[in-house]
Length: 212
Image 1 (tube, rainbow, N blue to C red):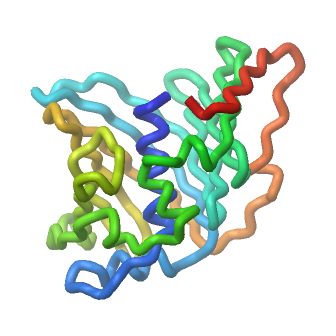
Image 2 (image 1 turned 120 degrees about the vertical axis):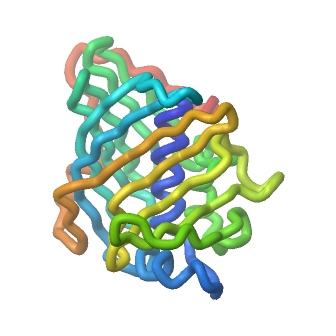
């Protein structure tokens, strides 16, 4: 849960925060000031410090600013995380179980706290240019000490025309998680029902009101 949450919260923080002036910020500003909605497929690969593949997953991602998202894994097994802006639902069909947490408590101490606080991105991250790779502008973000409680050392966000193509997360042990987006659509009308969750009949609901 923690690893998945960190990835999602970082995506949301980038989508909701405001970039400040600087040589590496033009591409990032186009992204964070861009379309209010985004829909895409993704392929996620997690590797250890030796480059060995630990896990591969894929699914769909829908975002509606500010703070609403639907992140669904469909391979190799199903898992769904939905945030309606107030609560985060993590549903595991195989276990017939869903955990619900207050969004503001879960986001506290994570990059997504930038959403609620409307802080400048530069307040919590050092923003660097990663140059261009495969025709994309690469923006590198490093959490500042004490500002963000994260389990990664840096993020690389790959942008083409202000649209995210890829995100890479590098952890303290030398491993990394690589997320590649495809079938990307921005500015599309998304059904509000995507960002609501009603537990199916027979599902155990664990209400973690403390956000632990």
